Image (cartoon, rainbow, N blue to C red):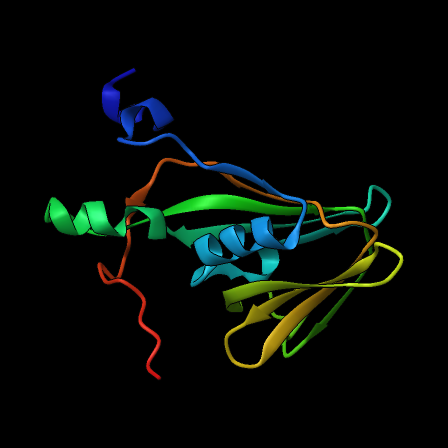
Length: 162
């Protein structure tokens, strides 16, 4: 097997893959910042009601690497990551054509509104007025990189005009 036939390994990259867990609002804000502008096809949304787990396979922009890329004059990168949420009781969405598996969605932010009993609502805000709302028993969100970083197809840092 030649080198070009082998799968990429994280060891080949300059930095280790991210694996973060959020169990409070402060931790969630860190993950929210890192998943801003992540894109994913609607077909990569998964909810396992029996095990109360919700997950997305994202193509995440590597915000944590933009300064290094600029300093080294190299292209900005994306990486595939899994965003998973445990203890999910119910999932609702708006502004998403559920039957359109080719639909590409863009994640803008995550927010959590706690209820008095420790439960709460985790919202995934999408571009174009879309949203996914997760009723959760407790806040338990994981972000884990699952591939080697790759050059962002646009070769540009996402921008948000004011």
